[in-house]
Length: 205
Image (cartoon, rainbow, N blue to C red; front, side, top):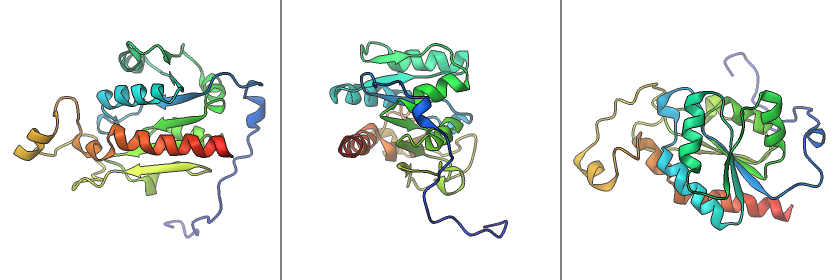
């Protein structure tokens, strides 16, 4: 809009040949967790990722976790720890990540560049937005679902959370495990419910 263009009304088509990336026949279904991002405030709490991984396992679906640096690898290992259905992938280049993305039944992503690659490959994706605005940085394409926090200060667009928890917050949430608090509005139960609906829709297509 700032450049004078109208927003597109149709779905995105990036012209990528997804079939060339996908192994045929497809192996066991899996969901990709795109957990890596830049700002600390954009990270969904690790405890939430672990609970979601457990819930995905109850659906009979595997979880795969890519990583791009040692910090992301360590996070992926903590998320996957103890889950037989969760796999931390080896170090992959962008083409390798694209191949894994193309074969996924769905993705769950934070506000991250790989979410846009998932959209370009038409992979159904739930993108989670706490401090940022999906209207500005949300992935555009088919079956892209943006879940934005409605916490009072969201979207703050800040790299560092300056929210001061109230006494009620301290009673209601684990401030060490559920930070930043804007993501408490996007808890694992809510995300798992949306993901289950998304997976069912893909099965019925």
